[in-house]
Image 1 (cartoon, rainbow, N blue to C red):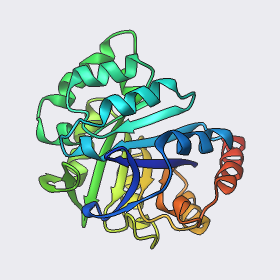
Image 2: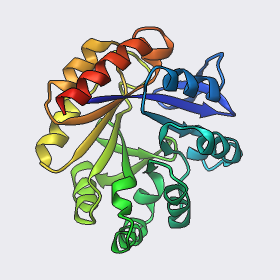
Image 3: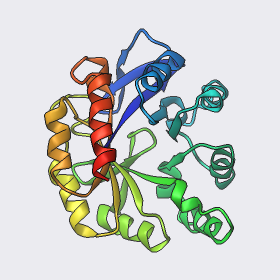
Image 4: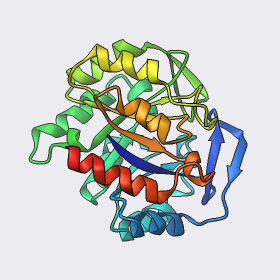
Length: 250
């Protein structure tokens, strides 16, 4: 299981939200470029960048973010406001390693069907797509966690799998930003549901003990860690050591 450092961006600042609340924001005194370079200099191969403005439908950050993403040597897992097939194609074709789709896939019944058709060409877009599932008490949330979906969690997963999308980023909102431990029970339920799921965990990681707890599930592909890094509970050096061991194991 690989550790992916997270960088959330709001109004061009590196931030963290508590339980997805835009009124409960911690801003960190470092730029996006500086944070990416810190990870890159310590051997991290992939970084998770979320445009929190874009998640609410405000795309004022995008040109700033895309310029930085184009210039970094890091693999970027990117999300926040990816609302169209054209935007997915643009990002993948430009070299973004993974594109996270969330709100549009939930609110537009035909979006995933249309996206799945891209797999018929030479580039297998499904390999570059991450389906975001943000969950609060097993209710799927979207639009920056501001809206609730009536779609049941496992039914939505089954729909995605039937269309060829198998990598999921699941955020347990009740854990996010609290440093109180990861949603082990939720992830175990999802892993038990299907043997082909590639699951990325997110939310609540406070220490390497929490990382170990997720790794012990046996089939977690990776985990996204954010606030624990900024609060000095997990060091970049520890991430580097863990990821080197993870690569040796796999």
